[in-house]
Image 1 (cartoon, rainbow, N blue to C red):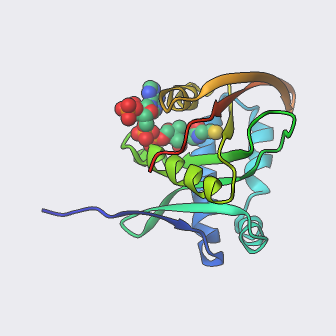
Image 2: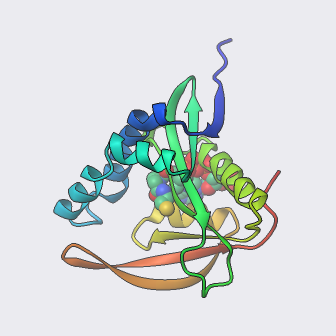
Length: 173
Ligand SMILES: CC(C)(COP(=O)(O)OP(=O)(O)OC[C@H]1O[C@@H](n2cnc3c(N)ncnc32)[C@H](O)[C@@H]1OP(=O)(O)O)[C@@H](O)C(=O)NCCC(=O)NCCS
């Protein structure tokens, strides 16, 4: 029997190319037809390997999800950017390559990101997703997130709705 190996670890500067690739593929898959095309291309273009390398060197909270020694997902996290909301931590982004979705890996990555936040004293967590991103909404709802806010944000020519999910219970071990 061939066993596959999954691991979740802190990203290092040498991962920048692979994470940029995952970002490119997963964002196109998630947002084509949702975010206006020109704006989506612009958002992807500015997140090349150099952007990721400097984010890692700056100490951004960034986890790499590996499957059989290939990076297939990532999560970024840190202090909540909207301090008026009663959540101390935030998962900024959590993305998997399409062919690695639906296998339980997103849940594992989410749990590790929440544990990392808790280790830094951020016991509650907020996550924002676009209201048109059905997959993300189903995922965060299934993980126990409560919808706590909706907000409009401009993406190029379009105004899109973002939904915030709050998580207050202790992260899964
Ligand atoms: C959203 C995403 C991270 C979920 O990761 P995943 O690995 O596919 O999800 P998992 O397999 O770990 O599923 C976890 C739970 O959510 C549920 N779930 C996941 N996707 C779902 C969907 N589309 N519809 C209904 N339920 C879903 C699963 O059934 C599972 O529940 P269970 O454990 O009780 O059976 C992943 O699909 C992804 O990367 N999507 C594109 C990027 C994105 O939208 N990121 C979030 C933006 S903030």
